[in-house]
Length: 411
Ligand code: ASP
Ligand code: MG
Image (cartoon, rainbow, N blue to C red; front, side, top):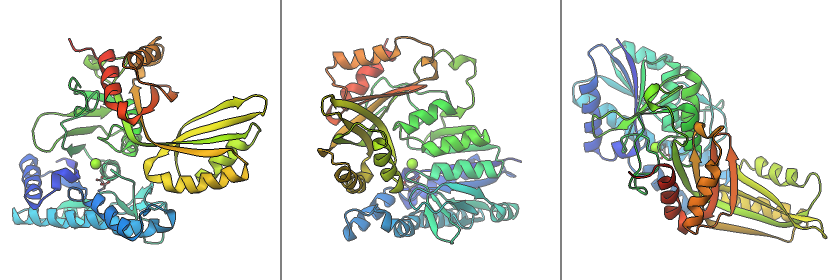
């Protein structure tokens, strides 16, 4: 007997026909005494549609004052898909029950729209499995100490599935999606992108953090925490996908770069002409942190030695531009800065690979590819296993292709 957790994304459950297909597929793959938990996202673009609805009330629905209500709204999406999938199983003769985030015991922080899982108490899930039912669990949602629904950030169903697999000590965790695995770059942009058989948690986390949309970054962290291999594969075919795990087996070793990731949902802020004094950066970033806004790339540059002023430049997620703008304009005024500039037409392109540790010339190779393509680099940032460049958004496609060709030449 095996306990398996399977997650199906929004595109896999976009219509009632597709929901019936998912139910069929799960039943075909199920051994008679397997216990199965299916985690689902909201149908198709439901979450986006719900956000658009909220924009009908206020065009900035992500303001922190609305965040509790946004979660109340967004959690309805998954409530629809779980009910329909449980009905689909029943229709096919398989007992099944749908459970919300609260019913699966998914306890989260109170950071609405960006909740973190604190603990999982899956007693109800186990009880229903032991009765022979398939449990259909709502992804993306949990409940905080006040009993309020909290969502786990966009793409959070991945995290729900992996965390539930960890809490249940599941034998496997499969993430079914509309692509058949993890690629060395987005195959919609790069023709020669290669599917990986395996990738480590460490590298996948960096790929996901830098924009590879397949998995929510937090889900990879959770997989690493529980040491659960995550199999990312297609809903529509039987071909094996990519396994995210602790280490490579022999055949997949020897890469310097694992992939090229990109992120268009970034915006650049520049606070111009702030005093070059201790405590200034702290004031800027503490204000953003108090407003719960994550900052990504940061540079500070001396602009004018005589006047002793600097520019502080950083990027934030595009969803938070309006909030960040309000915060930063307040801080800039207090610091008597010369001005604030915001550029939303930027994008970030990154290379990721644990093999770059100790391999000289990797950055030069990346910048060389961009130079030949005449792509200007606005900001560079690095981590141990990645290098990222902020560029103009309209050069993104060219940049991703040039860098991919550099590291994965088409033979
Ligand atoms: N439905 C949510 C979203 O679109 C969660 C998910 O799909 O994982 O972000
Ligand atoms: Mg998703």
